[in-house]
Every structure is written in C-alpha cells, then in structure tokens.
Image (cartoon, rainbow, N blue to C red; front, top):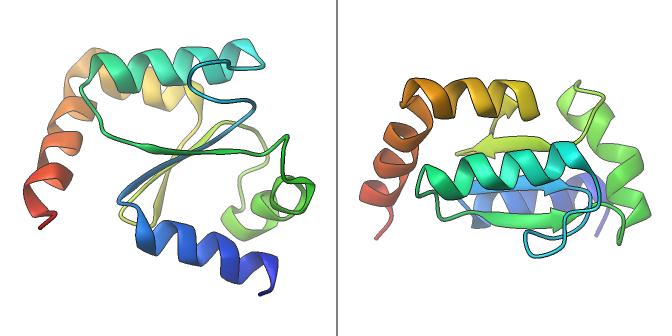
Length: 107
C-alpha cells in the first residue's frame, strides 16, 4: 500500500487522528506534548501516529495535507491544524464540542 493510501486509511478508520512526534505517553517535542494535553483536557478520544517511527509518513504527510509542521490534527478526515490551533480550539471550548460531536456520531 502506498504511503498516501496508508494515511487515507488511517483517517478513514479513526475519527480523530493526531500525527505527532512521539506518542501521547512520550511526546518527543513540546508542540506534540501541548497538543496531547489540549486534546486530553478536551476529553477527545484520539488515535495518534508517531511520525518519527514512520519516516515515509513523516516525509509524505506535509504534501498530503499541505501543512508543513507537526503535530497535525485531523477530525473526520479534515485537517484542523497544528499545536497553536489545537490550543486555541481547546481554550474556546470548541475542541471539546468537536470531540463530543465525533463521539456521538460513532456507532
């Protein structure tokens, strides 16, 4: 399977996906750490992809999403943004609402 197909498959399989450096338990940079904290505090049930463990995804995702930095948050297959946007959404309460909406639509 080509790397873009793997990315698409991940986005189809999981309603909320965070492509990050490291894991939620062991983020490898401050931006990934802050994104995980914001998602966790918003009560989001999310899937993470460690781009450091998959060099193909790390190299291809910026072209796929047209967004060059990590982390990258996708909800329902749509790019939401990076760390600053995630934190802004969390502060406004919008991230929690988005997470509830997704949770309510999953069978």
